[in-house]
Amino acid sequence: MIYIIQNYWQAFLYSDGYNMTGLAMTLWLLVISCAIGFCMAVPLAVARNARNPLIWGPVWFYTFIFRGSPLYVQLLVIYTGVYSLDVVQHNALLNAFFRQGIDCTILAFALNTGAYTTEIFAGAIKDTSFGEVDAGRSLGMSRVTLYRRIILPSALRRALPVYSNEVILMLHSTTLAFTATVPDILKVANDANSATYNSFAAFGLAALIYLCVSFTLIYGFRRAERHFLAFLQP
Amino acid sequence: MKKLSGACLAALSVFAAAMPLAAGAKTLTEIKFGVDATYPPFESLSPSGKFEGFDIDLGRAICADLKVKCVFVSQGFDGIIPALQARKFDAILSSMTVTPQRAQQIDFSSEMYNEPTSLIAKKGSGLKPTAASLKGKTVGVEAGTIQESYAKTYWQPYGVKVVSYPGQDQVYADLLSGRLDASLQDSVEADYGFLKTPKGADYTLAGNVTYDPKDVLGSYIAIGIRKDEPALKAKIDKAIATIIKNGTYKKIEAKYFNFNVYGPSPTK
Image (cartoon, rainbow over all chains, first blue to last red; front, side):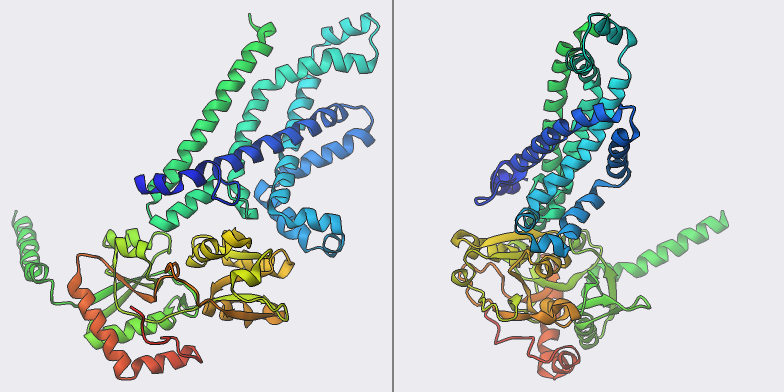
């Protein structure tokens, strides 16, 4: 245990001397994929609730694909499958992008969490109480203003508890990153395990780090809920 | 009651019969080898489920020399040292390279064979397994192998991009897709696992690694034995020496390889 901590603490936390590894890599993957996913999800959730099937259809299809298949398979398709296509290999820009394992990982993670987040937000928008919308309309708000000032703020707040769950699940999903050669916490734990054969200590440490991150996230979201959802308190 | 006492008596007598064996421990009747049978041509399972391969044949030759029974036990490589220490078997026979870290945990027999580490690259790339030649290139290795340690120790500090993969198959896949310029693995694995397959037609052995002042690659491949059993180690060492001397080793070697797998005279 002490040997592992002495030799791998740096790799577990931020770097193996050349690349970002461990906790820093895991957090980076989590933050960037959740950020991209969130930015995609807000407009897509609005589109998902549109009346025109040409608008909600493609969004439904996208969330269906990415919620209907395992993230591991999506990662393999994007990392291994897409790069083996001739179109990608012969296009300089696509080649440069898909060549890097980390780009493929972030793309897969962002698309995946984007799909779930879209459905979460779409559900919250659908659940907006009729009175709020009516009140907005009675003040002569246009559709855009209505969304911007009434529906979205209210829906995003009410979606917060479910969304926090999605973020924590995403943290757990980052353990798949090494499939695309991205050295996250689990990869360092695997290294420590194969160097020392002290499996309990190696994976125990990894679990401990994930627990700390989870607890921090839970605490942060709890605070945010108390702040943003104060209006729902009895 | 009678039945019970009879059973007790039987149990006692069995116990008594076992006693001298346990106390003596020197009368070796069988050796149980732990094997990770996923690594042809060294050890694998035949379609009918029998252990086969170079290591297995050597193990059988050692057992025959010691006139004991050979038993092979399947065990994944990850947990093979803990399993040895938990006495699930008596020795590890699974292409295990002797490294200082492993030697802290268990003892090793004398050399069984030696696999050089080699670099694979596309034909005509002109790459050599040196930091100078690979500068700016991307080299793939399997995580947890001595080749990964080697590339990270000698090459990464000099501007070679070293990428670790969860498995050797993925290394080859990315070598084929063009993400990697070269890959580093042991030579027999490279030959059997890739170069001799149709996919490896455009690739070639770019050379063996020779520079290793820090002894990252370890020395040779040997049988792993628990530290508290020097008697077994002595017997296995003697048996290895015998089969090398009497030509059994050469015969088995010829069955699998067309080169001298024992390598030059052992360095240690």
